[in-house]
Length: 312
Image (cartoon, rainbow, N blue to C red):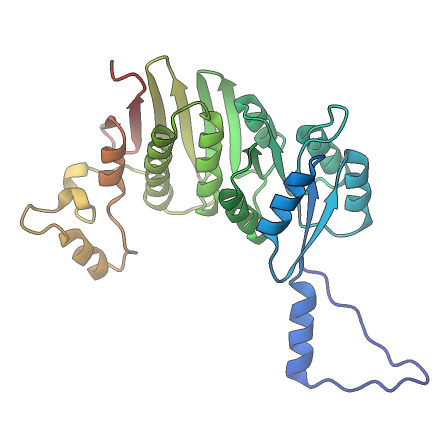
């Protein structure tokens, strides 16, 4: 909850101008809307990149170059988000995350570090908001920072249920704001894939997860979507299971899959008639991005397969 602005009192010998109501309101909004970011990294180039990328009106950015300085700044005043990177003497973002949460259990932290699925999973298990590997993707990081600053309840939106290098199980809370975090995490777990392959899998996974949340869970934040990520020498497989009643592909009239050949946008008209948001291309797009897309009989579980070698 935003803190109230300071109270202003007239002091003897000073003339205090009475503010008009609108002026006072604007001043109050200006005071409470400033968001404080703390950037921690031993590399000056990282500070330069992040200060340039993340600078916005209504934000203040502090910089720290080691863990001790970061903790001092964190304790000294309010901090909405910490970007926790490497410090000297082996002090890394994960170590800083643990110390920050010991000071303030609700600390919101994005950890940065080397490409490492293990580190990314450890960060999420330790309730980091996200994990980004270096070299940092400035645009994607800026978008995640914006989302993190807007997010009020997030700590249990992604749960790591089980994690082996070749089989990872996750639970995603049925909230749209959890989708971007989950899709980014998938990318951090598969940094060794060719860029095009990784982008295809991420885009297909995003569409399937959105469907599971919106249609399977009815966007009920009390429900969760179960994700399994399996990796073999020849294939990457992602299984998405929602808690809904399922559906029949043949009866899915609001999807582009159901369009007759002579009416390629019929589903758009139906979505408008039923008051649905624009869309309906998700399953069709996912099918075109991966090699196989298989639904169970009930229709609440789907498996996407992307082959990595061109052979089965």
